[in-house]
Length: 165
Image 1 (cartoon, helix red, strand yellow):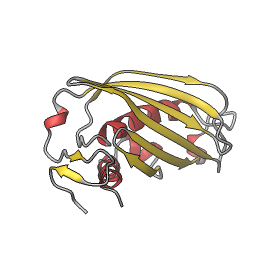
Image 2 (cartoon, one colour):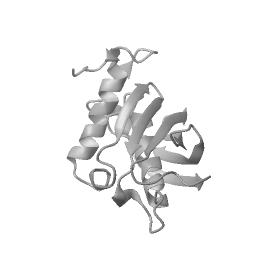
Image 3 (spheres, one colour):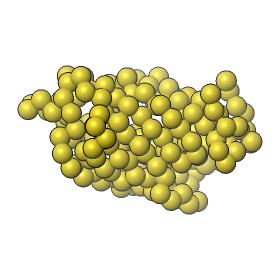
Image 4 (cartoon, one colour):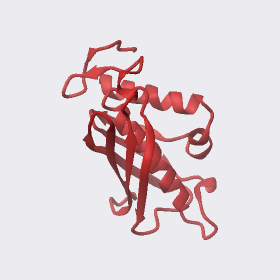
């Protein structure tokens, strides 16, 4: 398994181990791919992810925009992923029903010394765009946090820091 995927999954595990919002709302989120600046995930929709008309609740999409933007930052080697300064989500069509799978791709659109800009695209099983979001994070102090690493350009290896298998 590539170092970037391993590291990003480790950061996700730390979110779940915290037993906070992420663990309550989407504990079964699966990171299927991670390369520096890009994370792909899938989530099987559960009854607690639905609104009263039986489709995915917009709050789930908003929360995923937040969390997946953070994981996109993690995919660049930052164990601490900063704090949100702005978040926005647009809903294109219903995102699914109980039992469906929601796919998401989170990417870094820009990463500076202090701010990270991310975009998350959500698609249904047919590959149709159902929603997209943007997330801005203050990362000024997080880049030098312990446990952060630097990856090779392709994300296959850690070239600075400790790679934990």
